Length: 204
Image (tube, rainbow, N blue to C red):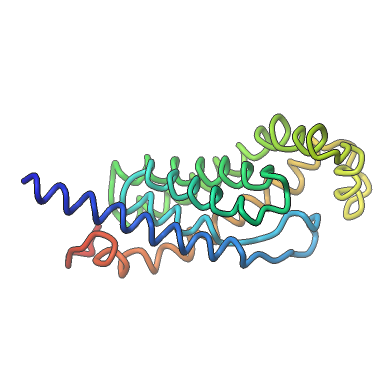
């Protein structure tokens, strides 16, 4: 029994390591999209966190989000602020999905967990950006609030303040980003299960 637990633990650590490596690579593959400020770039590095949360539990997904961003600090262009934001949202995304999925490990539950996690991440992004991330940009990186607001107003001049901008731009952007990760995870998770868990049964 002890040997079995040790093998399972080693397999979990190895799986987390592989998923973290994939997340690091995906974090480099970011690109801007139209109709949002240029600093909001789309990447799919939350996908391995979601898969890890499904395979190994919610804390594993959070760990992947943390490790990915710690590694990315080596090439940070935002003075750690971007990585902090990515970790906070990615951690919420993985934690929410993992907590819901572990109660009912079915395809339907996975879909609902991913959708709920995407919505929670989008809503939480308002609080994390408004109270944590953007104040760091203002006060630590020397990027004044009017400048940040100007990025939004360049696209939609009627935006009156950053709080409004977060609801108009960041919430839909973050929601769609999460849902895309869920859409990709759904067809690939089951085939990956034997590799991630070291078993032939891919039903969970």
